[in-house]
Image (cartoon, rainbow, N blue to C red; front, side, top):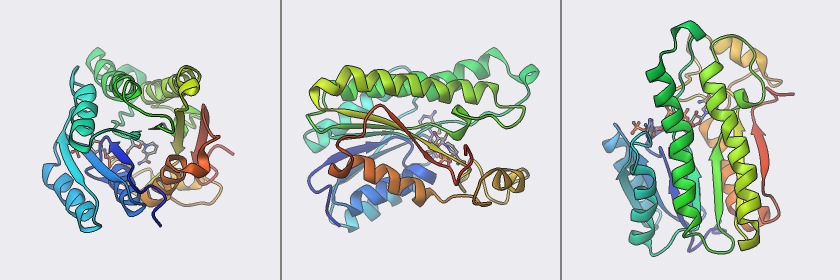
Length: 246
Ligand code: NDP
């Protein structure tokens, strides 16, 4: 159970949903974990309290990935507090789904700032600090691979950019023994995409398994990729989508 003993991790958007589940899984495996939040300070503090109850160090940091300096700053503050950084999980993201003619330039700027620029800047700051064996694990989306209907232009654009980023990071950092991977979740029951939402039945029907996934099912893939068992996995896209892309 302690495969990540002594590792230091940062999970962006760790106050709820997939990020919170990931932070708790990493701590369960022995890692110290910092989480970032924007609105959910209390929720982030509750995640930290659970991490500390497992005997690990926890840290809650406010960081809006859409703001220019926050992503790199969160990496620096985590490394300072924990004395280093081994694992960056780029989880925070915003889901904006709308018909093409209803997306404004401001929507484009915000989604790309959070989902792409913030991920780039956090990864860049982490790359400067990660030791051999370090990991950059990014949460993409099944919509980076397959867009099953209208309304996904901006979101799919932002998430598919993370595939290119991940492959290029793997090439750039491989010589230092640092791995970069991207996970594509299918429909996962969170505040962003509740399993009782208006389009939930259609989304579930698009998977092979006919159901939503849980945040914990994504978190367990993150934990695998963070561990020694995934030492030879880099530059890869891993689907946790119930067969959505099959
Ligand atoms: P939630 O909306 O449940 O949680 C989002 C998290 O990101 C929260 O912790 C939130 O913080 C944080 N966040 C929101 N905006 C910003 C911002 N501007 N800067 C920094 N952090 C921010 O989302 P999920 O858990 O569902 O999604 C997590 C990731 O998984 C996202 O990248 C999403 O695109 C991706 N994904 C989700 C799927 C799903 O079906 N749920 C499917 C495929 C991919 P706070 O609450 O403190 O404001």
